[in-house]
Each structure stands twice: as structure tokens, then as C-alpha cells.
Image (cartoon, rainbow, N blue to C red):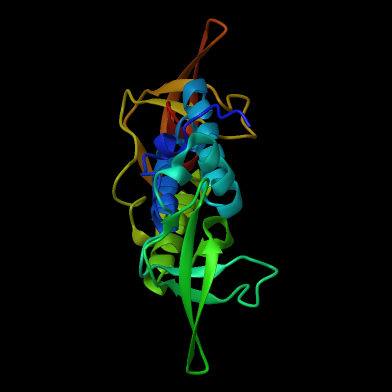
Length: 241
């Protein structure tokens, strides 16, 4: 297997990063390089592909194990330490899918680390020996963390979609008080039914408030012709979007 990229460097994490650290790094980078935030930028698009590829490999224990072996990390750094809570992924073992705790420091073999894992069941303690690729970190995202991520995703989805943002801004009063653009702002039209959809223009006058939204006169130059177009705020985005 030929490794083309250093996945840990792409995500900015250490080779022994936990699953939670991998997830947090991915969410942070995905937010920064998401295509919706960086349209018409080939370099950003390429970067996002690298991030997705790295996360797809490092978030899956078996794929991560195979990747680690090729770059030598499994012979240098153990993935788990004493006290870590792990789930067994060894289908021929009676402990398959059981959750236990690493009971001793891992021991390095030729190409892998071995772990002694302690299990508690019905008041009895048992210990099993497993190779690193037979163990998976227990995903114990707290309800608070999970709820926070859901709220962040919900807020991002709402505020990056113009129609949804407009519908949200109305009940909280932002549309009725503060215009999003000012005179001379360079904007892009997002009105699919308009012949000027996706055209870039300049706000030619101060916005006018009517009811629950602001209206703009946008000057658009196309094929040497100058045209003034009246558009609602939710039909406009900043030029870079």
C-alpha cells in the first residue's frame, strides 16, 4: 500500500490521538474548508478532499491500523494506555463486543502492541490478551457534547442558507432593524427565477425597509449594459459566498 499523504498531519493531530480528538479536529477543519464557505476556490476544494480522506481512514479502527503499519507508528507508539476503556472487535473471542479496561502497560511485538484487558461481568473479573487491531476506543460522547454539536450544525445549516436565514431573522427581529448590506457593497444574486441569478452587482442605493425585510437596488453590468434590479435581502449574498 503506497501512502500518499500523512493523515495525522492533515488533521493536525498526534499519531496516538483519541477518537474524540480525531472527531474534533475534523469538525473544526471541515467548518473552515467547507465548499459552501469557499466557492470557486479549487485549492480549498482539494484541501477538503484531503480532510475527508484522512478522517475516513483514521475514524475507522481497521483502516487506521493498516495505515499506521505502513508508516511505522504501530511499532513506535501504542494507540491505547493503561486505564483506557475499549471495546473488543475479535469475532472469534468470547469477549467480542464486550467493553473492558486496559489493565497493564501495552507490550510491543514485532508489528503490533498487545494489551491485557480486564472485564467486569456479573460481579466477576476476567482478563483477556488482545492485539491492538482487535480493540476499538469506546465512543462515549457525553449527552451535553452531542447536544452542542447538534446545535452547532443546526445553526450553521440555518445561517448559511439564505432563505432559512431570512425566515429565522424575521422572528428574532434582525431583518426589521439591521440591513445586511450597505450602499456600494458588492453582492451576488441568488434568485433562481431572475435572469440575473448568479450575477455580481453593486448596491446602488441605501436599502429600504418594507415590512419584515430590506429591499436593495443593485446595479449589474452585463454584456456592456448597465441594469438596476430590485431584490430582497434574502436574494443576495456577499460576493465571495
